[in-house]
Length: 339
Image 1 (cartoon, rainbow, N blue to C red):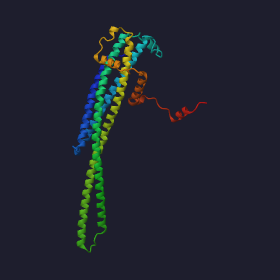
Image 2: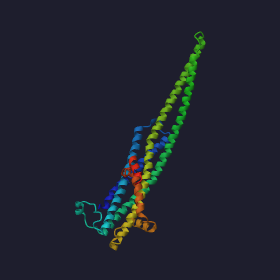
Image 3: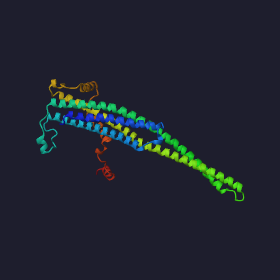
Image 4: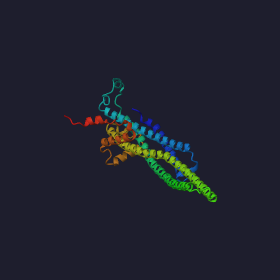
């Protein structure tokens, strides 16, 4: 069994990465807020913007990966503790399908006090990780809402540009019609004074059309800037939303896993020396046990709830581990009645 204290390093990395991820996301959202207010819109350095968001997304993904690995590692340690508990009553537990070498290398059952000490350490890490989840979720929710709010502002500015572009295009169309009318109705060369006046008017219309075209070009350029910003920061918003769902799934699993560990701890307590059960136990673990004892529903339908949160955990965070669904032909075959 892997010693639970080896999880300390994983927890430290997760804590540091979470702080960095929150800082990176806040920095990116603050930059977006400036664009929402229209600041520096004419001189945006898109490579810098893209790098800022990409680094924030990478940190968020790294945090989720570290937290996911820690939740799974703690769950695996609990499975090993449960196996050791069963081996107190059946030394062959867990070795039914093991190879010959594994059976030869298998140690005898661990002492209950040793299993309890390992579970205490796992519970301590679990409590610390639970605090991280409680810190992470409101931060991600706030950051996501701010990102969405500023995105809506940028999108609204782009919509206004769409309206302005339509107006300018309409003016350009009207101006083009006037130019066509003037070309078709030019005075004959016999009326030199009228022809000169018409040509001057035509030049004025042409100059005004050029001005309108330049206005449209500027508006189109501004729209492209807004749309590119939207594309960049929509990715950040999607990742933040995914982080909220991931933290919720991991926290829900961890809550049930903690109940499982405490229930196993209590079962082991009947086999261990009463004096050694609480020796060296941290206040954090004691508070978890007290909360478990105070909750009349704690441990109720534990196996069913554990299966449910594990299924949600896998579906949201490890979809590649889900069983492959049957193809249309296989499904049709399975649906055929017998006989």
